[in-house]
Image (cartoon, rainbow, N blue to C red; front, side, top):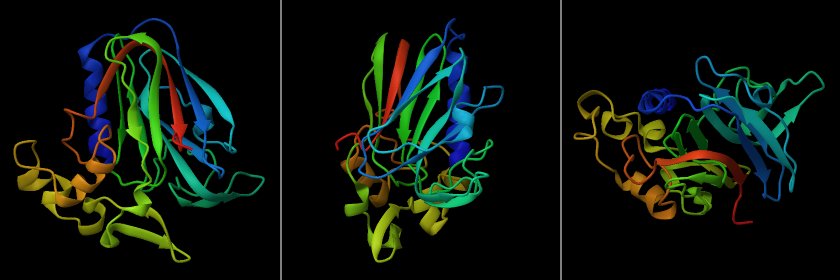
Length: 240
């Protein structure tokens, strides 16, 4: 489903030409544990933060994107890397390296997605599942500029059949597509359009807990937000 969401974001840039000037993304870790953010840039966009880095509790890191940038951010958890940057993460891993090198996070993973232009489009997506509470807040700017995200800890309400566990603890929540691989959950085949792919009982669990996050592939109406001439704060564990 990651490819579907990136394709959707790529189309958004057609709604407006790129604005002049840079946008600052500030990644903030309010979790009680270390998060290793990963970054993935769209085609032709510059890599931010060398693709991935360590973010300790209470730490923040600003990243500057040029006009027209598109891509995504996510948090990796329970990682271990050696001095050369090789290692692995329990959730959100991107090919066993610290610097993700244009590799996306392995589902299940919470995503912050952007396409910048005269009007920026942004969302928090649970289409690839959930691993960390995540929010996007616009700083300045004009327009709708609402906060998007999933503040709730879905690990506590994840259906058993979607749960990913480690040492007896739920560490992430799969999407129904990842768990069952059927067209009605993946919005593919005969269910490959907004008219034929409806919310499922599983996506409704996600939507109920996180009403301003994407719960399935065609959840655009209540999950995509816009703002112009803003910077953005991306917070892991925003309620902590």
